[in-house]
Length: 239
Image (cartoon, rainbow, N blue to C red):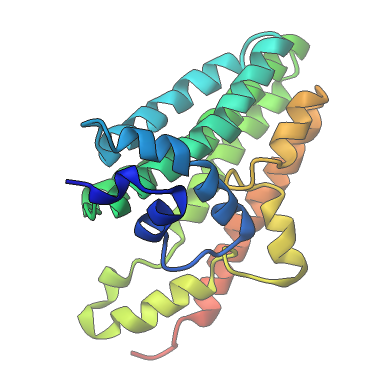
């Protein structure tokens, strides 16, 4: 039984906290997700069920972005805020119940990789439908490919054998912007879903979808190229 569930949010936070936060928004949304997490602890809802739910919600959010202005605003609120909170809830549930699993991590990664391509394609199709300019459709398709390539360019430590896994894990971390400081680290947060007050949100609210598509396309080009060349530079030349 979850004996702490009747306690305070501070007690729940002690049970559900992560080992580290790589940016302030992670900590903030973790705390926002604590009250619904506490309520769900009284139910039989599992962390993996919450994960599957928010992964599927991303399809709804993308579909809503194809509608009129109000539909797009509601869709981006769903994607940037509701899904972000649910993403925090599943982790809180798993840690609070001490039922973290590899399956849960895998499902979450699928959700993270699916979300942005769905949203970007939906925005591109929406702009194409309203302007009849094929260029935005091309940007949407090519941008999605580049986004997925930037994930493909990540080093998988398993490829290099068990004796090299620690080194390859370090290279994987060094090639990521997640924990980077400085200008590029802060700029990357402008585009990140984990930072809900991002360019995507303001672009939809201000109805500047063309600027959003072009900006994110440039970001995807830069990230794919940076990931590839940074990883190659970090890899040792000799085995």
